[in-house]
Length: 270
Image (cartoon, rainbow, N blue to C red; front, side):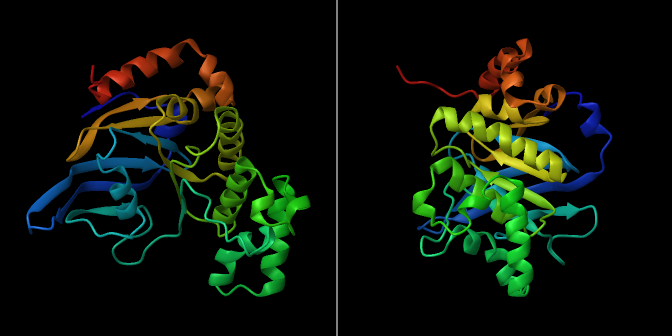
């Protein structure tokens, strides 16, 4: 695995959590052992935005499920700087490709769901939700239902629902893939701005190399399955320019794209 020099803002930060020699195998229908993750060793730093890219089916989502403690590794461990995940667990926000808003609940009622599960009193969670909706320009839609909102607005609501419980780490699993290109560009800008402001540690899974480059401090390229970290690129264009759109116009953007594409080693049939 090759690791390139880190952006100063990332290199100087404390490690938020690390994957240490994490491996994962499953049994198939015949009882044969199938190796999905061979060996992932990776440090993620506080307030860093890191993207994970790799060939389809290489095990990225399995990696996320292990990080979020939904799945136990076959060996290795995940260590938070404050605690060991195996012992205690950490507040992790998990935002998926689909917004998963409940259609029978208003936007306000969807946003407070995590607080409701935590047992926060109704008046407190409503006040907090309205503050978040106002802050991110959705207060006028508090009493609307999800079907009345555009795809981009629904994903903003999903992000607010994730942020409102104040997670230590936010996992984004292809959150823009169902949106049109223009909406994706706008949301890239908005979400990176929101997450930078909140100081969250963010890990993004994406098949879109350009998206990873435009948004991230670093990009980790994974091998084919059974997966491991092949190379880590220091990017930092969005942080440097304070804009994902400007990052896409940086001359280094295309060079990063070509290098990462080559590392993915995806064979295109003829």
